Amino acid sequence: MKNVISSADLSRKEIEGIFASADKFKKGTAKTSLKGKIVALAFFEPSTRTYNSFDAAAKKLGAEVIGFKSDIDTSITKGESFADTIRIISSYADCVVIRHKFDGAARFATQVTQKPVINAGDGKHEHPTQSLIDLYTVKTVFGRVDGLVYGIVGDLKYGRAAHSLIYTLTKFKPKRVHMVAPKHLRVEKEALSSIGYEYDEVDDIMDVANDVDVLYVTRIQKERFADELEYEKLKGSYKVDNGVVNALKSNAIIMHPLPRVNEIDREVDKSSKARYFEQAANGVPVRMALLDSILGGKNE
Amino acid sequence: MSEDKLTISKIRDGTVIDHIAAGKGLIIPHILGMNVDSEDIFTVLVNAQSSHMGKKDIVKIQNRELKEKELNLVALIASDATINIIKNFKVTDKRKVVLPKHIEGLLKCLNSSCITNNDPEATTSFDVVSRAPLVLQCSYCSIDMNELEILNQLSGK
Image (tube, rainbow over all chains, first blue to last red; front, side):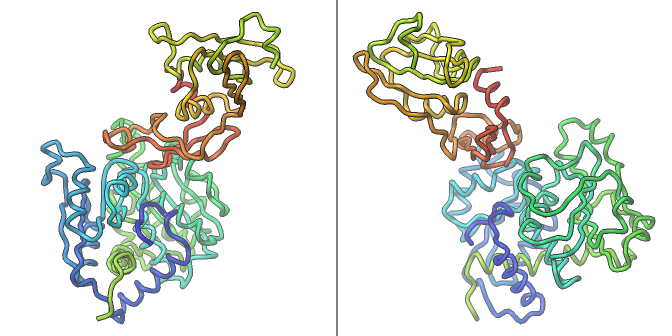
């Protein structure tokens, strides 16, 4: 594994290897170290969880971290191109983690640097490391990813985390996947063309609530809408509240890549089904496993 | 070919693009940059009779052999076209156009937030995900482009 740009870049075997490694990092039994390595975090778009969990993961492994959290602090503001920025920062580091507002930016970065590139979210396209965290969380709860019923809810048109989850699930054998979204926010036809598992598209969470094992909720991506009026019309289209929680099976879980706005009521946080904070915490061990795999950590 | 019976004359040297689906021949000069301002001498025969296709279009270009990039453009519009290289009134080479697996730089991605529409160094790249019907997928943002969208873009609509 060199670059992680799209969910398609990872085989099931590689994903399971990352999960096994993440388990060791979580338990503190892994002995590998990235001492002497430098990880560049090139975040051209705001981030809290992804930036900080990559930062923490690299530091826990003993690597140094360089980079930026926003293009405001870079020479982009002086007119430097994205390509030149990547050329320069990658020349100082052993790998580059990139977040950018344009779809395909990370793929393009692989053409201007020989260093490994990790896609930490490119526009509305993909967020492949998020789906690793998502499915790792599912595995820690259920002991498996296969054979479960998933309900992926929300902005399936613009949501990159949802896209990557839909693609990554093609490497597994979900029992079925319900894609729950208002008509205007349904998955683009391209994302559905390569799906090998059973799925359907529905409007209302309540239609599938008693069937799902994993309810994966996403935020409506306000920043991806060209027309703010369209966002205003759709922003309250769905909400997970205690009514939904009570309709779920007793062992079902609720996940969210975060940040949330209003799509999950705060009262749901108290439910044992709410696993989104645990999911966010899993960002560190999973990203440790990924960095270790790409940069070839050495045993201490 | 039934050109012997056609009302337009043979060319001495150049390229004849045959077996173009009827109606698409008029776009070929446009995508190859041939117009009243260019030096090219060319003929477009529309709705010619064809025993295999019923009707077909033919484009004859004098004193010019098409380059690889130009052949790829023709293949995007007319995937069944035949290229005949003519030298001294004789066909010296005859082959079908072949649509490559990847199309580099010839088309613009339809997604305005694709990196290829926002960085001057990012050249467009598409994977051919289906040949019939033709569907291309942007190698960067994964957005599809269908036959009509390709045709509209290449014909400037």
